[in-house]
Length: 534
Ligand code: ADP
Ligand code: ZN
Image (cartoon, rainbow, N blue to C red; front, side, top):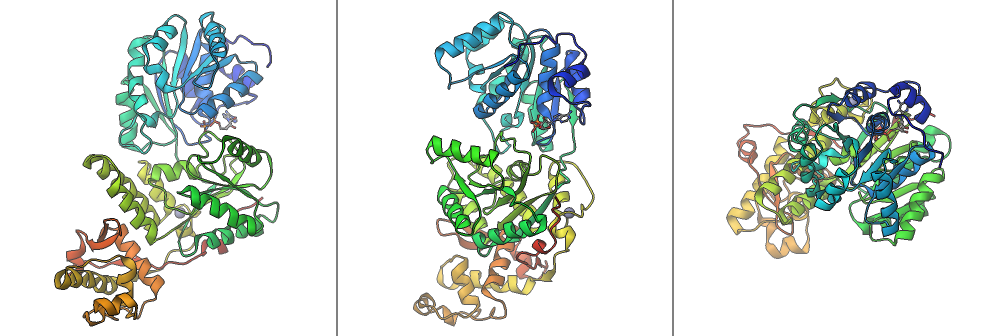
């Protein structure tokens, strides 16, 4: 690493130039840095790639003492510390991966005032020993990264964050920053309260990522749809195959998808917590260094990965929350070039996730919260208006239709599904009332379409009044109807088998007091209008 330079008291813009090689601040960076250098607190909401690191690193260099950075991501700590050292900044970290002699060296450097920045995992700061140790040296600023982790209503709650609220009292006079790339209005408020920052200035950037095009399509055959999508990008860019991340829910699905993509001539590698550490490291490093690698991963992948030219992020399973979706899709296009967030989602996703919520350990409040997260995600999937508008609304930032999402590019077709919905509802009601039975989507569709299956004959379901009443719609149409009704809560999935029952709004639909406007699914539609340039 380069020899350490001393920037205490230096002009912030000069440091920006000398350490980072940038000429101007981006967005609110300059204001945030001025606030903190002057000794004030700051709450910073800035999207991924917005440039949060500079906001706390630079004040730490200019103010006397060491900047304490609280970060939950050990891999990210290592990367940042290495990058800082290469630029002549004296940085270190304290975490569980260190040997005791390494740790002692970092501690010594801190106490003698040689460290510019010290990265520490949140759980360490909940120990009295660490706090006492820190008090023996001098802190310049305290930065709390991924601050949304303090929110119990958020999607990524970490109990260790709750203890961080006490840092203000413990280190009076040391300015604090809380930073996050994802926060609804409620989470923003919670961060401010729980981290005890009532006097902080708030810097809220736009969460819009205009270079990311959002597309969500109905899932029929996800792996084949994924290949078609990736191929369409290649045609559009007319260059090297693009690098991308594919997110799947289970390890098995990760491996199968990576294998399938490979058989289709796409350079794909798996990544999940069940793989040996060496394999994970090797796959991650190929993704970062080689061109055109597609990494297929569970959500364990990507936190803190800074690869600027990820051209697409694909979801083949429904994310559990809009925050998660936004964070994952945000890994595309950090370089500002056109990129795509693509997702395939279907009836099975809704049933599966409702069931997971039902069966999750946790009290009612917890389940209600998970349900709300899922509902917001479903709302985004089923919207007939602009996806970006829906996303930004969710983060409390009203906007206009964007012109760069699938629904803007081609307005979705809608149709009046009231009668279809009534047919389904009355089938559910009759089975319950006449036979005290309930069934999942598959069998209900068989009844409505008048199928002659073993189970239908055995149960005598061909004598139901609604048998065959829905033969005007295809199997896939019915799945689309059911998915959308589930998303709106007109029906609900219950128990281990996801049997369907009436939801709250069902009564109004059955009495024809409410109409059910549905979107007509089109598979691969936006693939015909790719916008990726190179
Ligand atoms: P975040 O933590 O918000 O995701 P980073 O701090 O990792 O973002 O910064 C994202 C990218 O933007 C990095 O490649 C960084 O070097 C670059 N960057 C940050 N600030 C500036 C600036 N003022 N001018 C140019 N590039 C910048
Ligand atoms: Zn739009």
